Image (cartoon, rainbow, N blue to C red):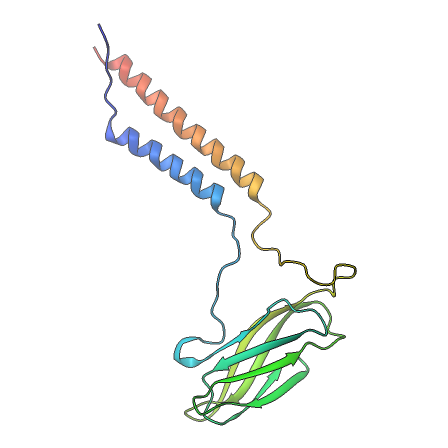
Length: 178
């Protein structure tokens, strides 16, 4: 006599849940994600051509949301430059990171008149990197996390645990069946 077994939907769902959790953990690297700075939307935004410049490097800072034809000052502590917004409130300026700027995270700030009056301040994060002695500074930015191996192991353990639960439930079901 051939004994056939039926998978119960709950058992299959449990296996799928454990597999999904394991795969989710394996691919959860915490990598770089796009972020909106400076208010975004109708409030205006400030963007930079390179958010990891070296000291002495020139980058382009562009923004929108200022009053038409208003002066705009860009600072990174110290002031990097000044420009004038166009008739739509947009601006763009090439600025040079000071040669003696210490490596580390900074906030690039654009300050100008808001369309409805008052002052509008737009910001963008900038991380000044080491000048890259010996590499010419052409290094790629490191993105993602360094936790790949531990998360992979954890994911595999969870998949194994899910499979073990399904096997145990099947055995228990087979023992109870006449």
